[in-house]
Structures are given as structure tokens and as C-alpha cells.
Image (cartoon, rainbow, N blue to C red; front, side):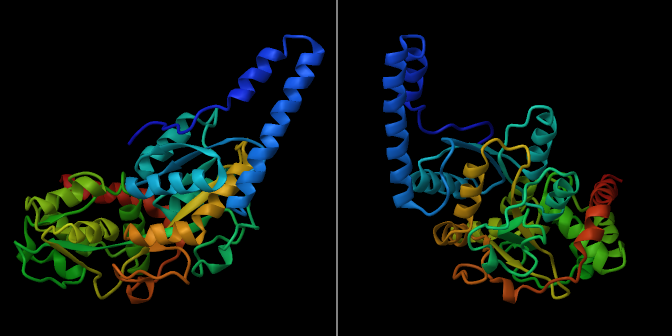
Length: 358
């Protein structure tokens, strides 16, 4: 779903108070007392439902990437717990960043979640983020899934792996470099790293870990590797059998489709991959600070973290494990430096696209 989704209605008392403001001072005072009593009752009710702060307003605007079903559950759970209305925009990481840029002179979002830790670091470097050191349960996040300034919280994560169509290939465990073999000619696709934050971060991490060894991806490109689109379109090419193998495919998409009975499987190459925390961040331009903090707290709550696991993503909290997919401890990781990746990710993504267009 693209575009803003608004849930709930404006409290009628607010509109009534504006109308009565044009009347006599005694009527205005009465309306003010009524509105104050109503607001106090709403705040008290919200306090009984959750410990997250809910004072100061009734709305929060949130930009988030897929999966859509998870986002809908987030919104429903948060609104039920706090009484705060969520205005939601969903899109790829690239679409969200483009929207933020377009709105730079008139910011709209309060909270942003991206599928790319490096893109979150870029927002931080630009001074776009607000620190929130008191975030509830942030101390339970995996090491490195919260930045040192408490501006980025990896409330969920994904990893990329190799996804293959089991009707075309019985089994597969080739490492990244081995996939450059002529054996896989015209069989491989990769998500567009200029649209997929997960793929972009993987490529940057791979190049960082291997001393910028392009041989594997140059070989795949020379053997006809294609870029069907962002994550969803790239996976679709394997689901339909147009391609047999998707490299750097987002794992939660694979697990959810396997659960639906699709003929695919996924593995993580032995040399390692990148686990990419998806940062939740409060923008420094927010005018709804309490509501934004409440939303971040909710993402870190027991309820929301279980939603993450049910959606085949990796929960950000180390005390919550998955029983429907591979957990963090069982995924081999490439040694990587996020700072280096931030500086080189865009250029690496552009080079990969260029290789596949030759």
C-alpha cells in the first residue's frame, strides 16, 4: 500500500471547542472544561493499556518498508494500546528516502523505519535523527543493533541468502564465488541494489569483507545475471521459474513463500552473509515527540517482537527467538565495517547494475 492511510476520526470535542470559541466567554470556558475532562479521561484510559507515553497529541506519522501485513499488525496493536492514530506510508527503502527528500522543506514523518542500516547511518550523519536513550527494552537488542547515540534501533532484521527453485534444481549449496561458474549460466537473478536496501548493504558488506573482490559478481554478470527489480519482483522471477536462482534474496520473503507451499528453498553461503538490522528512528523534525517515542517503545515491546517473528523476520531483541526460520546465531556472517559500507554502498550498487547491463 502506497500513500498515507489514516485510521480513526478526529475527536468531535476538538471541533466543538473551536466553534464555541467564537461564542461568549462563559460558553468558551464551559467548552474548555468539557474538552479538558474528555482529554484527561482518554489519557487515563490509555495509561491503563500501556506504559508507553501517550500525552500531547493524537497522531503519529510513520514511514515503513514491507512486509505490509506486519505493518498493519503494528498499527492495529499500537492504536489499541495507546489510542494514538497512525498515519502510515509504506514503500521500499528507496521510495521512503525519496519521499523524505521531497518533503525536506516541510517534514511530515515522525518515525521512519528502513530496511538498510547504512541508509539509517546516512540520516544520522545528516543530523536528521533524535536521540532516545530511554527507549523501553533497547538494552535487550543484539549487540550493534542500537547505535551509540540511541538514535537507531534495530527492532527487526533480515539477512540475504541464495534462494532457488526446487523444481529446477534439486539442491544447492554453492558459495558466492562458485555461483560464477558456467554451470549456472542464464540461471541467476539479483534484486536491484539501487532499490533494495538489503541487497545494497549486502554487496557493500561483501566487498568490504573481501577487499573489493568483484570476481564472483563479475562472473555472474558475464553469465547473464539479470536484475528483475526490487526484492518482490526479483523473487517472482524465481517463483515462476523464469530464473532458477536468486542471489542476495531477502530471507523473510523466502520463508513466507515456503510456508505457502511455493517450490523454493534458501540457504546462507558458507563464507557468510550480512544480517541487516532495520533501524527504527525518530526524526529530529518531529512535532509529536511523545507519540514518536511511544511508537518506538511499541516496536520493542513483547507484543510487537512476537509479530516480527511471526512475519519471518529476525526479532531485534535477543531474548525472542523464531521457530519458523533460521535464527541469528545460526547465520554465518561476513566480517564487515558499517562505516566503510556507508561510504561505498551507493557506488558499489551502481557498479553492479552497470555490470548486469553490459
